[in-house]
Length: 99
Image (cartoon, one colour):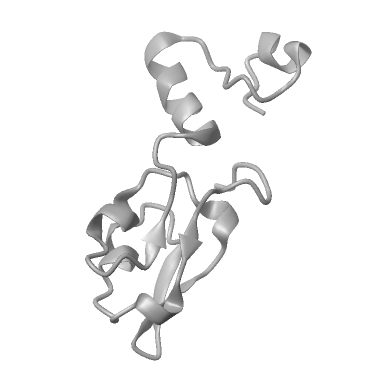
């Protein structure tokens, strides 16, 4: 599932990757795959900014603002019933659309 094109905060520094593969194992949306003994980003727009990849990267190759963006708003909305993230127009918010 893609959220919004070009808004994910995910940053990946290939020079810091040591090839452990944990990012590919923990990513719930398959943003990372292993290729040539290094992680590779398949599609940054698949990132839901959960932070699992960053928390499991011991080498600091991955940075992401975990808990931000539409994915967090959707999850929060499932709990609270208010599915809005504050980054779209008032009309969209009233429809329950996130961004």
